[in-house]
Image (cartoon, rainbow, N blue to C red):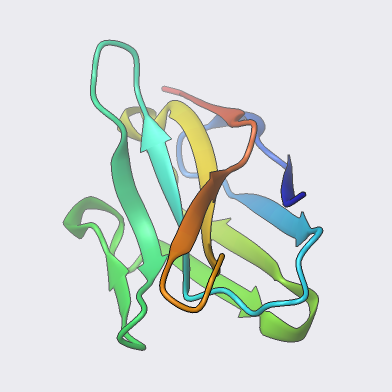
Length: 120
C-alpha cells in the first residue's frame, strides 16, 4: 500500500524560507508525475509546482522565482524549497504522486498535508 509522509512546514515571517519534503513508500514503481498543491481557507486546492508526466516542470505564476521543486526518483522523495514567502502563501500544502497501478491505469496519492503560515 502506497503511503506518503510529509515533513516541514510551520510558521515563518514574511520574507522567510521553508522547505517541505515528501517521501513515498510501498511501491516498486517510479511515479508518472508528482507535485505540490495547496489549499487556503475558503479556497479550492490548487497546484503549486508539478513535475508532469510529459517531463515538464510547471509552477503557478504566483510562486515563480520564489519556489523550487526537487525530486529524487530512485528514492521516491520530493521537496519544495520556498523562499521570499508572503502572507498569501499561507495554506495547507499537500504532496501528490501518481504511480502506475496496472498496465493500463495509474492511481493518485496524497500526503496528509502540512500547514504553512506566513505572518506579515
